[in-house]
Length: 98
Image (cartoon, rainbow, N blue to C red):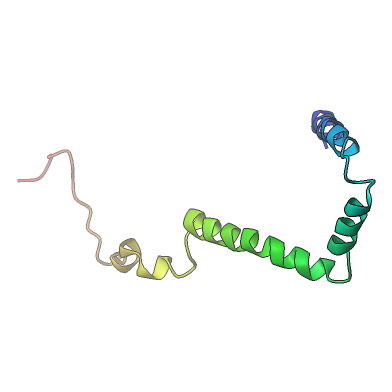
């Protein structure tokens, strides 16, 4: 990995760490109750449900960007392709077209 990327990631982490350390609720009883409610036995299930819409949106964006797998069978260019026996060479210069 390039040293610039590592440095940029480290700077982003250190820049955001100050606001996390300044949180007035994290050391209080309310903060501990909230953390206990988030990081309980159902954390993995809740995390999957939270991230599921992002995955669905990524699939939709990929289908728009790359096209669907069945897109090629309905494409007019695939249906109208001529076979090599159908092709004839025609002169575009006009020489010998009498």
